[in-house]
Length: 172
View 1 (spheres, rainbow, N blue to C red):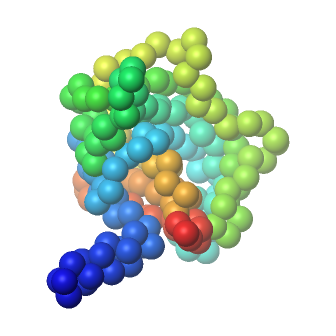
View 2 (view 1 turned 135 degrees about the horizontal axis):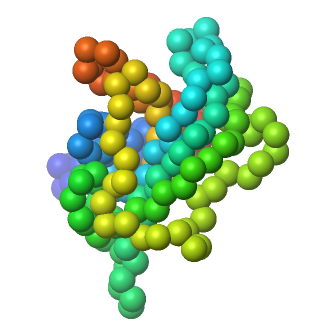
């Protein structure tokens, strides 16, 4: 009885924390599930903030991983998405030119353009159409209200650096 209550308390407390995300050249994984998929934006940085992260940038290209929703059944969201392997998800991609500015925990478009992606009319791809480049910034969103996004860059030596931006939103 005490063990069961302790386990339930542990699960409740861990659900209040933002998810743990790991990004590599080959996959993205979480200690939860990617219920709403993942979007990876390749960005051109206009300015860096005091925290050393992009403060103003332009999204040049994005690709979005969408979770399959089988007819008549609930989706089975993965906790790991492998970029070059097929899974119970599919990808879309599009060139872009949307400028963002980060303000605290949030980001806003500079010119009022609405952020995509819309999958209407875009080709469904079985694997991720993009590869990470060295010394190139990316902004990754994971469809979790507790996460604004993750800045990601692989430096010239091949070291992966990810900077998690919590949204400050409570899950309850």
